[in-house]
Amino acid sequence: MAARLGAGSAKPAPRRLAALLAALIAGAQGPAAAQATARQETVARSGAQVMPFSLAATIHVFTKTADGGTQRVLARQPQDAGQVILIRAHLRELQRQFTQRDFSAPERIHGAGMPGLAQLRQAPPAALAIDYREIEAGAQLRYTTTDPQLRAALHAWFDAQLADHGHDAVAGHDPAHAAMAHAARQP
Image (cartoon, rainbow, N blue to C red; front, side, top):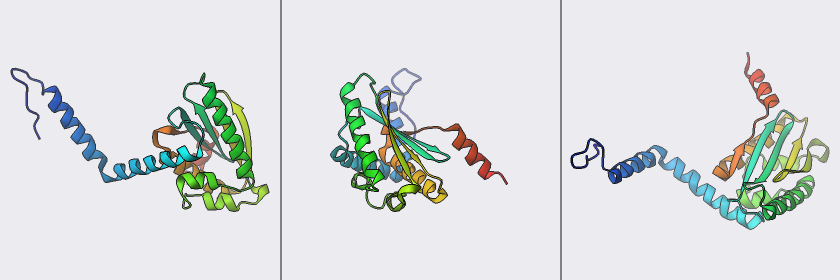
């Protein structure tokens, strides 16, 4: 598809170029991207019913580790004391619920079929520790386990949250976990 050139110009007309780029981007993303976006919009609406803080004013960081993982929620504007208070209260409550194996809050956001959720719910108390800690601009939950299957379920749960929260969540990086994963792939 050729872009129409503006009169006396060697460049495409700006409006036509913008339309062409938009069409190319939309075509490249295809139906899978539209489904992911629809899923993320549904999760954002459900999350607003469960999480007291603004999803748009916060960022979730999920870091897989060799012994579990860390879930951080941070205010995008660290000086936003109201969001920080809400984040801390919510994660403190999640820690209490998760320790009792009550994962109903993420289930209400992501659905009962969320990867890893059933295994986390069924984990014996001694098999999964969940610790709360306040950090600058928010709070974190640290999940630790020695059970490889439970660790895999936790990592699947993190992956599902990363996919569902879209641009409101990012994967953290733990060098020790990366080295362990690399070693596991060696023949």
